[in-house]
Image (cartoon, rainbow, N blue to C red):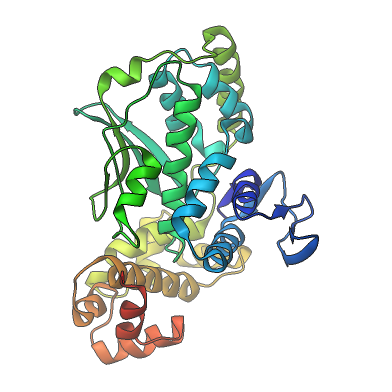
Length: 336
């Protein structure tokens, strides 16, 4: 099950004027207004984290204000040894390389990639989890937090060329530009912070290569304990989504591609409390919602891309999954 460090949830709660206690209670004005499962080893399940973000976002009303407040509340100190390694790395480039390498110790729901092959260089944020309505908001908070923290630990003035998001703008684009201190592009091909290559060579205020290398060695040990494939469900989802346009695959064929028998696949899914049908439905539902939200494909085309031979069958299934017909869902999530 994908997880997220609880520090991100605490920062978002603080941004909204609330407190998330260690026992999972969300407190506002001295009153417990919501309860989450108590974090295990300092981490929350991705579903619990996303539902909390969505609940806070819906109740707050002004997403730009909330993203800005979150960027002020979240500090690299909140992510443990990785945060210290980031701050004590000698340059911004070295900091971002550590983020790229070790972000999995913080969460396996997303990853960062530093692309220096172009000018400007790109610090890219990639989702590594199934679709959720709050991910656009999460992505804005993630890049806003990183933009502000880079300016905190870099010794000289840091200039960003632009920030880009894959999703459409849901508010006033000028307010986003003011928040990031640079142009913000929406409906882009990736979520990224763009900066001139020379910015990467700026020194960090607390740069100490010896300390950073010591912390990096600790992180290397920690990341070595993490499994690349944390669950059969995760691997199965990765394999199912790209193949759905060719029709719903048979479990036996998928199992063979995964190097196991059909019986073994069923057994390992059962150990995770799942069936093949459960994961197939999740793959179809997630892909359908993503296409309805982020593409101009017709509903008939989306039915085909998610493994249905008839639009009517897809529409009935989609309504079972999310409680709305595809057209209603698309209308509801379309930018106003």
